[in-house]
Length: 51
Image 1 (cartoon, rainbow, N blue to C red):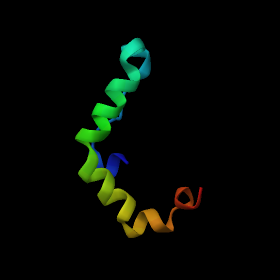
Image 2 (image 1 turned 45 degrees about the vertical axis):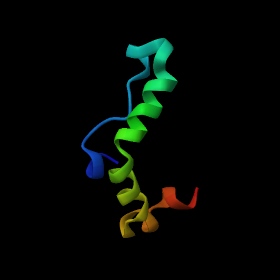
Image 3 (image 1 turned 90 degrees about the vertical axis):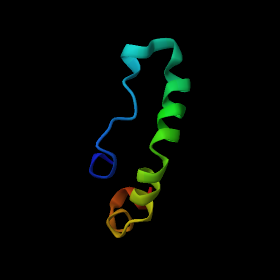
Image 4 (image 1 turned 120 degrees about the vertical axis):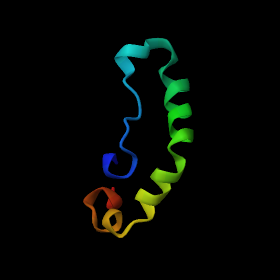
């Protein structure tokens, strides 16, 4: 994921109560890079794609 986004999703220990909200917000911000990652040939060859 870092190859496509250069960012982290979130650090739960720092945010404690708002973790779910901030994680969803971060996914929204990273939508295009994440889509590129999941549609890449590299992802399809990965063992994670089959899990």
